Each structure stands twice: as structure tokens, then as C-alpha cells.
Image (cartoon, rainbow, N blue to C red; front, side, top):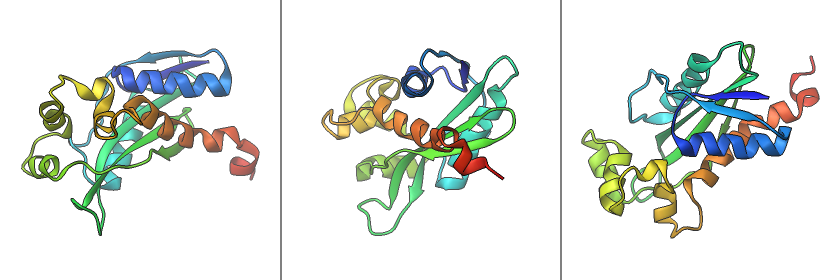
Length: 176
């Protein structure tokens, strides 16, 4: 199988490869930067899901079996420390249908959210907090905040896997 990911971020490429190899066996996964057509720091499920869909559709061509778009965004939630939770959404496109999945979410520290609400991107703020350049292309903020118990690749694998569930169960989901 040939798979294209709408990003050159090694975390997104590796997470996609890890999950799709478990499902299909050998896969060839390539990443290309494409526009998400949403703000660099998406807010809300609509922007974040649309960003993932746009990435999957914008990178798709008939040369590939599947295209994958992954987008992280902040969702407003009640009864939390900061009022926001970070979720990664994955859209998988085959030229016909899109399937969606989401990762486990987590809260950033209040100082991160305060800076993001002033217009900064989460990644830039977390790089300063953690003292690591391009943290999001390495172990990720979730690894830093969970003391290494969950890294960004594992977190991203969750959204890829959940987006694949309908494709793994075609008869149940698409039998009309």
C-alpha cells in the first residue's frame, strides 16, 4: 500500500506508518507539506477537523491508496483548569470517502493557554517551557507534560487508529 501524509512532520509520518503497518503489513508512507487552510493554531473541533480533512484531500492523488491529514487544535471545555483541551484529529481519504478519528486529549498549563490566547502558537510556547526546539516534531508536549508516559507519536497513533476503525470494519460501516 502507498500512503501519503499531508505533512513532513516525522511524528505524523511515523505514527501513520506504525498503525497502518499493523493493519496492512508493509506500507510505503511519504509525507508532503500541504496547506491546512485553517489558522496555524486551530481552535474548536470545526477548525481542527476541517484542517485534517483539508490536509488529506490536498495531498491526495491517484498514485496513493490513502491520504492522511492530521491536525491538532484546542477545544473549549467546561470545568477544566484552563478551559481548553488539546486533541489531534485524523482524516483518512481514499479519493471517495473520509474517515475521522481523534486522540486522547490533555490540558496545557495555564501559562501556555494565556500566551496562545494572545496569538502565539502552542508549539512555540511549549518549546520555551520545555527548553527544546521543535518539541512537536520530537517527543511532543504530551511527553514533556506526562513525564514521558505518553509521547506525541503514541498520541498521534491514537487518532490514526480511530480513523481506521470504519475501514477495518467495512461490512459494518459501509454495507448499504
